[in-house]
Length: 69
Image 1: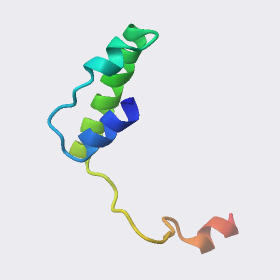
Image 2: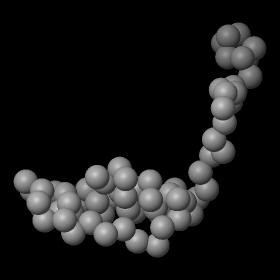
Image 3: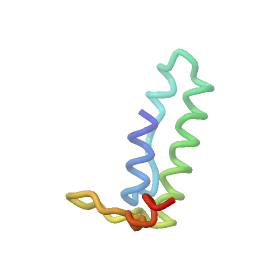
């Protein structure tokens, strides 16, 4: 799936093999475009730097300022 290709690129893969997924798709042209966009997005996310994964949520904005508006 394109989402898996994006995830592989985010993890640092140099490439993904997608021939069968495209070949058996009902619309190979659209599937190829979907993979292209997914791979580009995954690569760009890797290069930019993904946010650190955490086990719990943390506020990104001060709560007091948010509620005083």
